[in-house]
Length: 311
Image 1 (cartoon, rainbow, N blue to C red):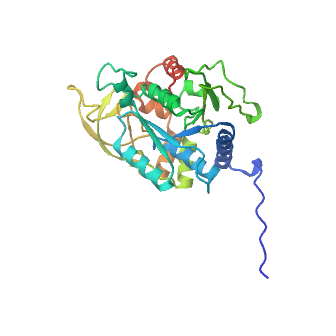
Image 2: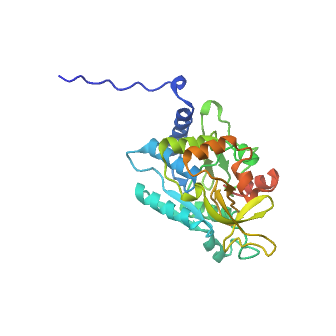
Image 3: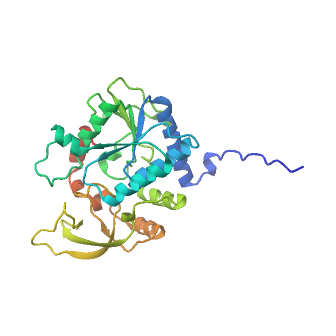
């Protein structure tokens, strides 16, 4: 008679390596959201952080379907490659994707821009709050990390938002011993960040370990850019070269992929995950500090945007 192998005992915290510990913590957080919230959603844009959170959700709930839909607030100024990847990834997983457009908020008059070419990044807050009210979400799961910038470092894992969708860093709930409280009154909601304690390097190492597919923009490629305020600005119809600027074709990659109007690449020859990991380990500037035109502002400015509903 063939021997029956006993199941492996669960690993103790002391036996987990760094990535396994982060993964275990994130899965616990995701299951807490599903258990405590009546109608959560996972924000999925196709960016690297949301891809990691989506994989963690798969590990938390498969073989069942995810207990929440995916939600994307589309500014209308996203990179086409990222949107195509987003749709292909959702189709491959067979999950539900809900898309709400900043363009619709503009048509309703709830978002007003000074000029057609203005960045719509901050305007996402309005469309997001409208989607929350329309669809009745009481928890939104996202891929924000504390290492990205100072205002985000103030966030709790379960970040409370009042009935106006606003964030008050001084009015948050204690999270002692990883005990989370997601209870909210009607109209209020939680923003939940399962990878709060991850770094950019952790994210890339996890992507490599899991062999996660990503939009091609994250790998080094040739692109027309101009140098502006210390950043490499991609030359696109939304971000054209100014008359005094010289257009260069350089090897670049994107460390983060957001709204075209405010997202910049960095000079890089890193065309593989191993090369990106090595480059990230040497980086001295955070990804947002090095690549986001709208983050070249003060901590107080970002905190103000977050208080108004920015994710």
